Image (cartoon, rainbow, N blue to C red):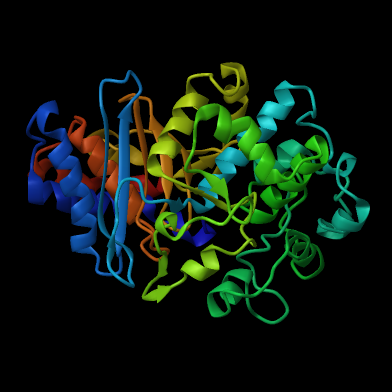
Length: 414
């Protein structure tokens, strides 16, 4: 997830939802026709946006009364391999939800404390000087909780531009074979980039935080991060199609992830780089993603009280708040939230167009991707349409459009 990505999501949702209302009017049909309606939503993403080559979606009710997955488009351009519901995908920053869950498991096992300074687990040679904000060196004061909540003030190694005027994201798109180790990425944030704030004073999304958490997980467990994911999450939950890039045997050609695009550029080779790690390096399927979030929400990975700690929200960007590895999206203003039926949800999004969310109002889990980094709003419109299909209260076209005109400024200010 990039910082510029969601600044205008609330307004984009308003405009897109209003247009959708004009096109479709009131929700019609019953649960019996949900499957074809959901497939039409997925297929519509491909039909509407020529830069989106594939789309996959899984939807499940928490009570087990409904489970559906479907896909559209082409997973591999060379040969035209079709996208299916079982095609693996690069989940990008949805990985952070997995990483944070591992940290909370270790917290429950009393292997670490959330107020422990990261300096207790990481060598001074790695972190000394990583946050020298306002003339003071806060590097030894940053806690595990600060890292989880993006409140460390540490610069973002991935998206910020270094001395050469380029970001790591730029570098990987230009040269997918460029080698970036985790230590190099942390060193870049420490030596080339400017800290954003003193720890605990502001929320600033930084992939560096989660690379440091990965290093802490390895220090605490004495295991490779991929093995920790496997032992604590993937194997116990039966997530047979989920793995960390670069860990374990290479995937067979038949199980390669769907290709990812940055506008017209195929960036799949870049996304398969081991530069993506605890911050964004997991490959999964939508079925495995839903199974993971259900287990997390239902208390089968960590205790519900521990999950509540993960939901201690701080404002990130309108309309997103951030907890410990969890995003909470509650659209501002009565237009989208009350009239257009975009219910609050929590989970995480990724820069590849990936998403994994739970909507308590409908007891609904949603996972998917559009594998396009430049269509930032489309995954949210897709999820809104899924909510609409499950019975959100949608106004008549005239009501919706007039309310939109009245409420736009309020949506910005709420």
